[in-house]
Length: 339
Image (cartoon, rainbow, N blue to C red; front, side):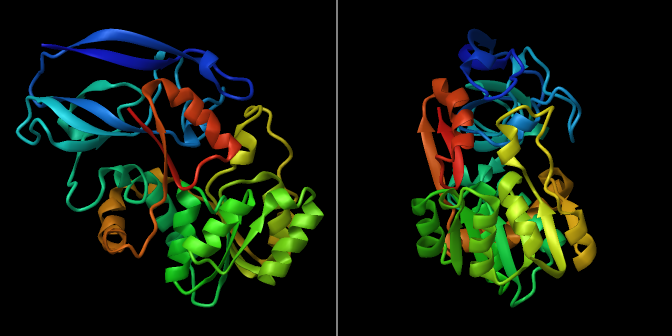
């Protein structure tokens, strides 16, 4: 028994915008012979995430650079199609960090079994997966939200930001989202029921954007930053005494020369004046506490109290283009590729 596999190999490090030229699509036969405790999964949904672009640095970040010449790493949800493990049988749904490939042979320790009756399997790549973990622990552990706090979320219509905003509302915060375009801002106020939204595209200067955010907030207790760049330059002078700033991402800088980034926001004097704290957070820091997050958040997902917005792209061939589209702001919520 064998399986006709398709795989996207990462073969060239990008200088700026990532595209098809940085990948090669290859086909091969995957031998179906299994050792003890091995499983073969067939991917059905593959994740594209901003961190993929961080891994394409030439220098060490929180990871060593993604090696050239191997399958692009990424999370996936799929079905077991062959098993030599007592823990999994054919037809089981699982999540794995199996990358951009249709079939993957994995040790059973690399898989997490999913229950489609409990929640849509796609949520393992979104609200009940890495983005949810990032949002939940980033806000609760680093942001320390209190009722009445003003929480500002950049990238608020994205996979992590949309969840941070909703978790903040549940914690009693006044939540203002920053997003690009009128449609996304309407999604924030009409669907997610945030207290306000600021369209950064409507304010092309730092001064104009800062004035709009100040009008919407009156000052910021918690800033959850998914974007960096000009948006963060606009927000930082508006922080209040003992504000908490969570640095989750800087997607505004991922699209260009990652190894020669633009000047950072000029924020240190504001940190001093306001005795504020600033903390970087990564999902991996809370992997061991995943069950804790799921226990709290899964009932909200099942009852519809949390909106788990997803944007789908169809086709295995579309994976590089889907990654690219993250930097054009085309997605609402979690971006996923159906294969």
